[in-house]
Structure formats: C-alpha cells, structure tokens
Length: 384
Ligand SMILES: NC(=O)C1=CN([C@@H]2O[C@H](COP(=O)(O)OP(=O)(O)OC[C@H]3O[C@@H](n4cnc5c(N)ncnc54)[C@H](O)[C@@H]3O)[C@@H](O)[C@H]2O)C=CC1
Image 1 (cartoon, rainbow, N blue to C red):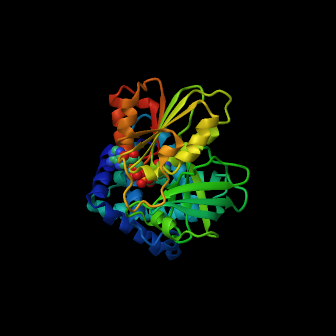
Image 2: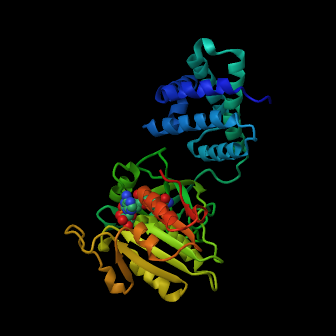
Image 3: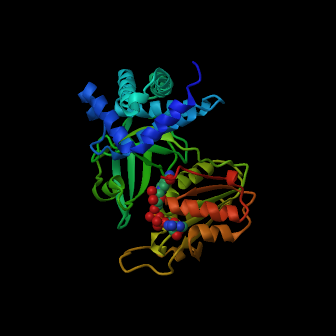
C-alpha cells in the first residue's frame, strides 16, 4: 500500500469537521438506504453514535498519514470491531459502510474528488472498515452474556446497589475492569458499569449506581430496575490494577468506589501485600454507605488503611436513615476527597488509582501531580 496523500486526508478532515453532524447523518442515511434493516441495530437516539462515529473517522484520517506505522491505530480499530459485535454487525455491513463513507466523501469533496483523493481517502476507509471487520470475524469470545437481577436496594435517594447472577458461563473480567452493559428498559443502548466485586465462579455481580443528572440509563436503574430483570453484557475494558509489590494510594468519589472495592477484595488474597491507603469521599457523612464493609475488610487485612472524607460535617434533612460513619471508629476528615488525600502525606512512592465523578478525578490528578506524584504513577478509567 502506498502512503496516502497528506493533502487529501487533511481536506477530508476539514470537510468532516466543517459539519460533522451532517456528515454522520448523511453516511448513516446512505447506509440505511442500502439496507433498511440496519436501522434496527442502532439505538432510537443516534446523537451519541454519530458523535463517536465522527471521532473515529477523524482519528483514522489523522493517524493514517503518520509515517511511523499504524500499530496503535490498528489495535484501536480491532477493539472497536470486537465491541461492535454486540450490535449484531456482521462482515457484509462493513462493506456497506465503506460504500456509504466513500459516497459521502465524494459528495463532500465535489469537484475536488480527484483520483488521488479517492485513493487516499479510500485507503483510510478501507483500513477503518477492514480492520474492524477482521477483528470481529476472528474474535472467539461470546458476543453477549446475560445476568438476572436478584436484589436491588437504595442507598440514598439517587444511589442504588444492584446484585445479579449470570444465567450461564461468561468471560471472566479482571477486578477493576468495567463491562459494556445493556438494561431491558433501554434496548440497544450500552453503558459502561464497573462491578464492585471480582469475577467469581458463581457468576455473581454487584453494581453501585448513581443516578447522574441527565443520565438516562443510570436514572432508570435507580428508579425502575426490578428483581427478575435480565441485563446483557458484552466486552470488558479497563486497565486499573494493583501491584501487590508496590504501596498504593486509592482515592474514590462516591459510587466510584465500586471498581476499587473489587480490586481490594481481590488484593486480600495475597499473603503479605504492600500497604494500601484508601480515601473514600462523599458530599455528606450519611453517603459513606460502604464504610461499614470497608471497616470489616481493614479489620482482617492490616495492610489496608481507610480514611473517610466528606465535604460537609452534617447530613441534610433529606438524608434519612443514614448511618453515622463515626460509629465505625474509622478516621473521618472534612473536605474534598482529592484535596484531603493529596495534602495528607508524601505519596511519591505510590501507585495511585482514582475513580469517581470526572471533575473529581481530573482535579485530584492535578493536585497529586502538584504534590510530587509522577503522572505515570496515576491511573484511572477514561473520563467521559
Ligand atoms: N469506572 C468509573 O469510571 C466509574 C465512575 N463512576 C462515576 O463516579 C461518580 C460517582 O458519583 P457520586 O457517587 O454522586 O459521587 P459524588 O458526586 O458524591 O462525589 C464524591 C466525591 O467527589 C468529590 N467531588 C465531586 N465533584 C468534585 C469536583 N468538581 N472537584 C473535585 N472533587 C469533586 C466530592 O468532594 C466527593 O468527595 C458518577 O459520576 C459515576 O459515573 C462510578 C463508578 C465507576
């Protein structure tokens, strides 16, 4: 394959960026016109799909011109191809998508659609659709698996714990990873959720969910999920892990505790692992719902130290029936969890894991870096 021409790729990126919403709409319109049944594979609300789609097209156009090989790009597209199996996308659909993309680029380029432009853009789109198709064809794991809700209870008015049991064998996930999840109330719509317990032979799963403002899926889980609902899972992702040979600092915001909790339970299997200090923060003391469980874990695992952090000293009037975390005798500090943790000690020798609301993770990482922690030592899931 000859190196695609930079000017044509740059022009293609400019055209897409000029009106990315229209570009994506037109490509999908062309695709659905060629095969109307494909519309059923996508969620009713396409805005997020279109946004991600344009990001991928732009990423490919930007990366393919790089002279130093396309290793990372190929890995990225291969993962995307495996992920897309859950939508019911099959090989033939990738050829149709290639045709839809090329027709739209031809339309967008207008008189500028020269042989050279067609060849360069064609190579990029062939790479995009070809790598995704190839990876999907060679993937060996089941596309989807299911689990049934066996228990659900509210922690506060906008947070719930949901427990499920897998209905059959499922691909194991590593503690700290998150799973692509679909709930029956929102068919064909996928969200990432982090299990709060490690993978286990009984297929038991536990999720801690906050109804985030504007979050359709999380709100539905908190308000509508019932025992007996069947959830569907697809790929697992995420690279957060704990090396038992290195001391760690874990900082959790609210239900962001979930994957760190799974990691701690998993970590407890080691005989004498390196120390771990967990800072667990919420807005109000009554929201530190997991302190009781964490205290039990710390009582039998001397390597674990826990500090609860709350922004407010007292609970608001609406936080009823909340347990007072002071009863567990654990350290409780007031402030924002990231600021409290960063100023608490010298963490420069620690591996650091962060999880919680995106602004909290972002600000905590900044604070830690300002306090001398190396950026490479800090890990968290992608911020969305
Ligand atoms: N794998 C992942 O990335 C996971 C992410 N989450 C996310 O974690 C969030 C948890 O929400 P809640 O339980 O309501 O936690 P929350 O909103 O009550 O926040 C908990 C902590 O974050 C701090 N915080 C909040 N906003 C901040 C800001 N702008 N700057 C600095 N610190 C801030 C608070 O001071 C508190 O200590 C959800 O948005 C959920 O999507 C939850 C589970 C897994």
